[in-house]
Image (cartoon, rainbow, N blue to C red; front, top):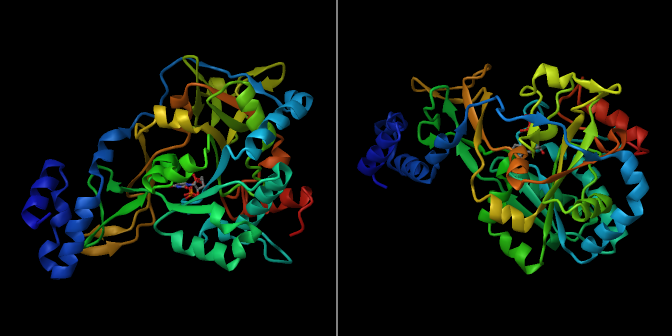
Length: 404
Ligand code: UTP
């Protein structure tokens, strides 16, 4: 696209300010800017979901509880192990986040949880994947989603650690798609005078990014039918859990979600429930107070918090999704060019546009809520100290017999 066409193209989209500094740039820089403009997906600005309120009728979901699982573990596991043995399930690690709350420079997975020895989050998670592969008697394909910002460092870390003893041809890295960032009026930011400001498009971007990266061909070649998606920040993450897979298949659900019982009504986790009879996840800030605190027989009615560990059927993903996820606005402090200077704001100054994996649940139409013991499977590392922190996660690791 040349300058004139670019100007017209931006005008039609209300973004012509992106060319404000064009005349100050070298020829090379001008070419970079025009290419950035051509490559940027401005249409996502039209898919913004500004609503925070759910409008439908909210009701509780019934879950397969810890007690149910204890009773039927052998049956669930044997089905799940068969699926793993036949190579029908792959793991998808979401590691494209920016981890800003942790305030750590590198990719979150490289964070050292060890005290007397080195023990990264990636290593902890890979150890769990190795255990389940041993139990199934077969290695499992692992897709790792990174971001433009952390991809090289992540790949290098896996290489330097000899892929944690896992066959490296079964580990497939892919970079998450990006979306433009914008100010509160929807005007896209410039990161530099000749660069459009872009950021990873949220954890809901995983499936379209996987497909866009060309890895769907691996899934087809290997006849992978289910994808177990999980976040990097749970250091007790149990992925590809045979009982979870078996339960989801036996209950004939199109997806499954590992959930934990909330510790209190105020705990800040998304809760799985039904909206107009369909499974959905309400974020803690979306949940009306009256529902949040509602109890029956001394238990919270809406108590199943999601842990970012989901099992999705690939066929159903292909049928239901194809880019229909809404974009949410996340208020963030975004470095950008203002009045000719690049500024690094300390306070939110605009939005990152994020798709959310929880929105996929609603699109799937049916979802098994599968309750796991939180002390054994849920140790999120969001902050350095306090709630969901390195401190609390270390305590839980020790409680689970892991030497730090
Ligand atoms: P969070 O919602 O905690 O976001 O991610 P974050 O960016 O890692 O951390 P903060 O909010 O800046 O502190 C939950 C999971 O989703 C992944 C993260 O890597 C983590 O595993 N994620 C998040 C992505 O893969 N891509 C994204 O764009 C956002």
